Amino acid sequence: MAGLSSYEKNVLRRASVGDMLVRTAARFPDKVVLKFRDKTYTFAQFNSIVNRCAHGLSKLGVKKGDRAAILSHNCDHFLIYWWALMKLGAIITPLNFMLKGKEVKYIVNHSESCIFVVEDSLIGNMISVKDELKSVKTFCYINLTGSEVPDGWMNIEDLWKDEYPDTEPEVEIYYDDPAALLYTSGTEAAPKGVLNSHLNFYMDVLSSLYDLRMGPDDRIIAGIPFFHVAAMYLFVALLAGGAYAIIEYAPDPVEILKFTQDEKITVWVWPPALYTGLPFMPDFDKYDMSSLRLCIIFGSLAPPSVIEKWKDLLPEAGFMNYYGQTELSPLGASLLPEDFDKKPTSIGKPHMPLQMKVFGPDDNELPSGETGELVARGPAVMLGYYKEEEKTAQTFRKGWHHTGDLVRMDEEGYIYFVDRRKDIIKSGGENVSSQEVEAVLFRHPAVADAAVIGLPDPYWSEAVTAVVVPAPGQVIDEEDIIAFCKKELAGYKVPKRVIKIDALPRNPSGKILKNVLRDKFAEKG
Image (cartoon, rainbow, N blue to C red; front, side, top):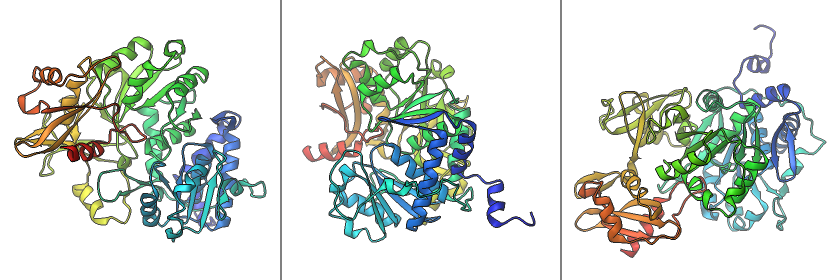
């Protein structure tokens, strides 16, 4: 390749996520890609404003390899900022908008972010730690609510003023360059930073086409918080494929129904809690949801009664169970609609870019049907944990990513989620899967939602404890629940105690916060 500059050699055949937008804007320049409140963007307009933002960030000194933090609910500005960073080869570090000052301080300082963008209504929580964020050179705000902003904060819209060109930034980007630094919300003392690469996001597109069968005619609600890797996956996939998204500031059940009807949404991607609660919304029956072709359930399995209800409501739609991990960006496995009736409790087969096996404690493969740890390898696996070489090496031992999740795989290759290793309850010398007990509880007509945890017990070591939410108009009777479980479970798996609660604590992506339940009820004894 004599005569080519270094940049020309790079751009000739690279895999850079920002280039996806360039190509889709050329294919569908006048097609609307996203809508937020009263603003819409065509692919060409979005690419233009992203480029101006990239040049604006570059003028501030943001360069390839820099980490760039953001704390905000979903909005168009979040996406503009993110894609501009990817075109510069910089690394977005999105933070959960529920985090408090000290939690934000740890992540921003650990990532050494050079810029910090914050939604105006969230700035008040950051004032006490602002001066301790030593790596941050520029503080920006997003004007979402009209809240008053103190001095020293730059309006993010100044990054894409008309004075900045909308030409493509000339930056050398390679497939294994980091594109996102996502901090996990685990129960460990400090969250781990997961580094996802440009290649990882390319695998998202490949999987969306093959495993989800998404295309240019699809329309989704971008309601999963953008700091979550599942939301990033969906937006990369729809943008590369020429699809459309309407952005939700935060998931709102009434808004979901209204958007589905008015925007002719074709694909839903929600955790079980939303599928459970939506039919109880006021005037639910008046909404037209016939445009839906696919309903994806992620985070955990939905109760069978909930699935049956939705199948009656949407007889033409397909249903899919989805399992993924941030460390797999967030691929994993899914159960296709044509297999749903045959294997309703399975999370399906591995996604196309991944190979998966089940390992025993000795890190050797187990026979079909035996329970062990799910391991994976392929180009969807993260680069590693940021600044955590030992934890990365432990997770990647023997050339496989160890998920920490316990599963079994049947002879046909379908995977069944047993439990997260940390949620296995050790009761009376036996291992109890909290998910197995929850599956039984969901079959009780008085139970709308349930979580099973282990609480300290002098006799059992950990007592199997059911935390349940009553269904509307139902009364929870502890003895009745226990008797119901005894009919279907071995004695050591039956809850020793049933606790009634109005609602289970969940993170913004819908996962139950069992650590919160354990802390809360262990204290009460």
